[in-house]
Image 1: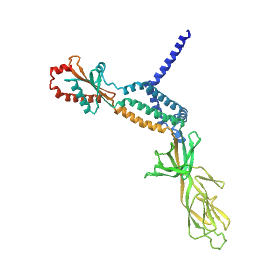
Image 2 (image 1 turned 120 degrees about the vertical axis):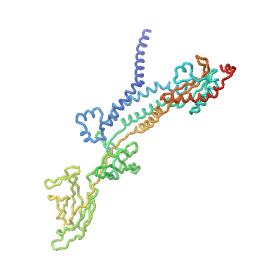
Image 3 (image 1 turned 45 degrees about the horizontal axis):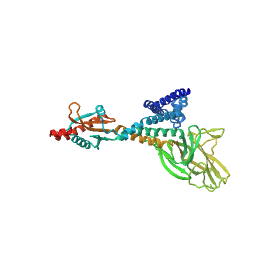
Image 4 (image 1 turned 90 degrees about the vertical axis):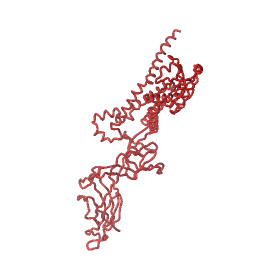
Length: 503
């Protein structure tokens, strides 16, 4: 028996602590504070440059090294995937659930069992209210029914002992609108949490005609996709002054060896397939030759058969279009091969080197081979005196056009929770429409005796859950309609026996 008080004394504080935690979680203040923090950090995520959408060079130009280290360490450069932001959304979700559970039973009773007959204490406290003299109960009730019908309500008679009353309401569902908003917020946060845990973002660079399924992730790794994407073509539209107007890419999804979806994308108009979004991010020349067009004219000073022999080459220039690695026939004994192309070249010690991958000083290397002489000649554009045999070759080559290939840069994001986010957004719009524009209005009409005069009057009261100023105007319209309906009747004074019977 001695242990019983101790058991009670230790369990009571635990229950009290659990109750305090529950009340704090269910508190509107707690939920509002946490929701404000989510909004503030989400807004910060739209202002602060985010990885991996922003190029590393742009990040370094935008912030000092110290600021960038701080932002990376705190997760502000990837807010929506930071563990603390996901934890904050979990806390907000728990508060919404706790608040809903705490208040839903009363709300459901209020919704499922509406208060239809106002007692005396309810009538004294209600605002607005009005009393209208009536000759008898039935006349007053009928006038109230007519007036309510004229305003679009469907009144019903309520019986309490030997009394009748009129009750009418509209938009009772508005009382549950707050739970529609709660459900929409939970869906939005659920979608964000799923994206933060299971989603990923990366980058794909595709040359025209290239197909790939590897995504470069923001942490430097790669991730294979269960399907591939191909870039059929890419381009840029410019304004009249030559500045870029927009980039576009014609993409195709290849799944199980079949083209299953194709779309031309531009900025902010992505291609979506299996919850993976491909956004247009960048565009430019890839440093690869798409086509080199040149003319080949016989070199009159070259003769492989020796002095005095007629030249074995045709007299007319020949037009050739080819790319790196291609070989073309100039005549039966002479060929030209497109050996290599440098985007930015440099010459050192009689050798040509690639100085960088950027487009700077381009150079094309072709090899002309004469079977008759058994010699090969290096032809360079531009002519490089140290290494070029342009004037010694059996043909004089002249470039006409150089078309470089292009690449498209795609930001890739896998967001499996977006269905929850967008469903929640739609549901939030519906809920807010109910909250702000759908008003739960209730009217009561009860024949009673005036406490001071003892006269029979029709007590009329009304209530609205919001926008009370507009509701009071509607209430005044109802009173005017009842008065108007009662005037012809009130002009005829009831006889004393009838009045006594009413009393």
